[in-house]
Length: 321
Image 1 (cartoon, rainbow, N blue to C red):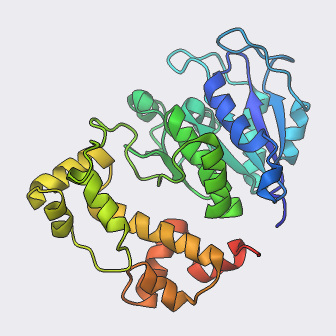
Image 2 (spheres, rainbow, N blue to C red):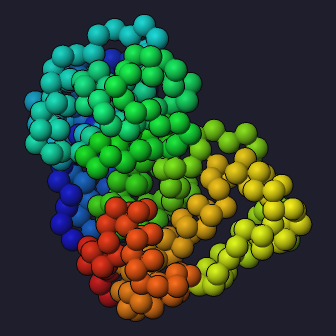
């Protein structure tokens, strides 16, 4: 498997260290146990030679800023004060515009989307940021199609994510795009985080999923995961949760951040990814194992979620013995 090119993480004065550390943990940490060539990661500074973070911690860049033009992926890990921000360095805005012209990929975490919007890169695109900044973002950048209640938005060459934890999901999503679900899951396991959360889930969930062994929504989800190869309807899940369909739908959406049908779709596609990477069965059998009644239905659903056809996904990510 080829290395996905160099990756630059942008540091700056007033750096938000948590978001920076997310990108460094996922992309910069050497991972020889994965058995694949990992990202060539460099740290560049947008302003000072040694930018100082919000807690006074200094960051030492590993490459001069000019090398950002070599990066196939650029990560903007948050940005300083969004309410009354100091000017964004013009050289950073110009570098990002050049990156888009040369088809590089740009990823923002949390308030990093303000930098992309200031550069004009999000006009006419869907994008998101932390829910606390939603109103300010809409007011300041009316040409951007702001996406509410999502963890991240993948627009192909530009990926924007919501709050800090959603940055983990977005970065793992990048790994999944480059290496497939198996490698992304291995990285997630090392980080002790959820292996996969679709971008369409809610940023802010009012009530966490209740843990009641053998009862409630959690038990219904376990039951559904064991029979993804079979038809499942919401009324069955409601019965397993000892709720009326209406009550179940409302509580499920409040707790999970997505509808029951959307959750089922994501679970079926996650299983399909694993089967395709194993490469041991036909597309028809994969569709059947994931609960789809026809290959065409499976193809449409898989491409809607992953933006790539199942056959192409298997060619890209099939693992060797």
